[in-house]
Image (cartoon, rainbow, N blue to C red; front, side, top):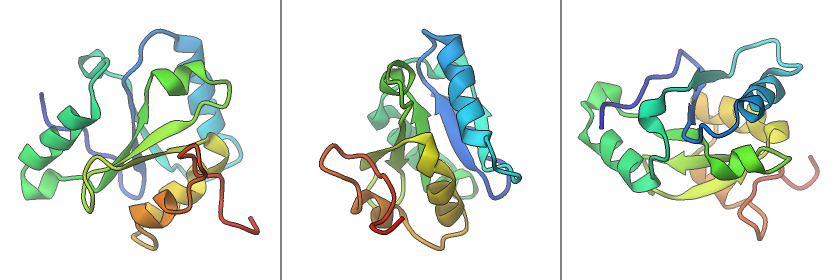
Amino acid sequence: MTPLPQPEDLTSLVLRTDFTDNAAWDALKAALIFGDPYPNATFVSDPQYARVGIHALVQADADADDDDKLTYLFLADSTTMADDEHPLLAVDLYDQPGRTFRVPPRWYAEVSANMSIANMDFADFADAADESGTFRGFEGD
């Protein structure tokens, strides 16, 4: 696999791995940028990543040069595209490579912003995920 794409400065990589529904991809992108005056996502829709698995992504990051390594990314996978809520799959590539949780667009900006500036780490959000493995904000949000 080629090296993973690099997100633009202070944004998170949103990597499309399911190409079955272009309308769902467009709806997801619109939901992620709605009401946010600052860009918080670098969207990559490249068919070479179609159906790529978490293990392959973790390995691609491990094989990258140190300057090209990512600490996390978000996948727009088959669940993201099929579910009406469009929850992205967050994937840890640094502390516990392969650890995941889901994040609906409503909470994406909070997660992305805090992880991109290292204000909070992946585990802070993953540990706060509900029983379905989905982060829906912290208590009191």
